[in-house]
Amino acid sequence: MQVEDERRHADQYKEQMEKANARMKQLKRQLEEAEEEATRANASRRKLQRELDDATEANEGLSREVSTLKNRLRRGGPITFSSSRSGRRQLHIEGASLELSDDDAESKGSDVNEAQPAPAE
Image (tube, rainbow, N blue to C red; front, top):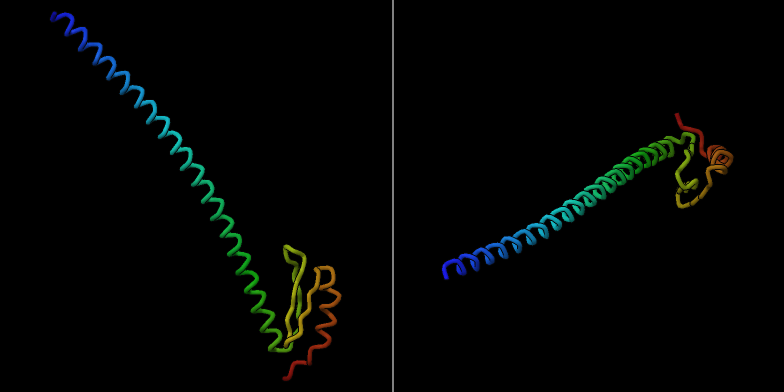
């Protein structure tokens, strides 16, 4: 009788241990999946941060260029065009709009500069 009880308890303990081991393996798999997802999320975040930094840098460059062009317009100085990623530039002068490709910018840029009044000194 006592041997049967011990055997039954041993079987119960063995079954509990197998369930615990199965649960542990399941939790380990979930942990690995969560770590992989976190790694992917971090890589995506770093990529987005690089893109944001690039966009911010481009924005700052364009803001400087706009400021320079505004100052030249105020002083009546020559207007120059620099290339853009899209190959297109748009210039607004006193309600008039001029859109140029980079190829046209150099030839038409000199026309715009000739139309500017001479600086008053």
